[in-house]
Image (cartoon, rainbow, N blue to C red; front, side, top):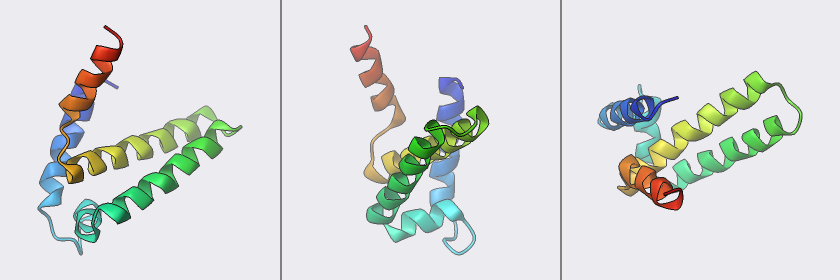
Length: 94
């Protein structure tokens, strides 16, 4: 996965934020608020841990993708640009 992929996904999530909560999963999450988004991240993180404890590599990749997806939703809901996260990682590994 490239940074471009994450940036494109972040853009899609921003567009879907404006959608109808009844027909858009992402708009529905945003409408439910930060607590609902954080709960979903907790669920996804648990699924990543379980997948990492002996499930297939494909399953771990799928659950990790779900977690990244929901992290992007949370970042957007919190007003934190993905670029800030990337900059932080770059600083740590400079």
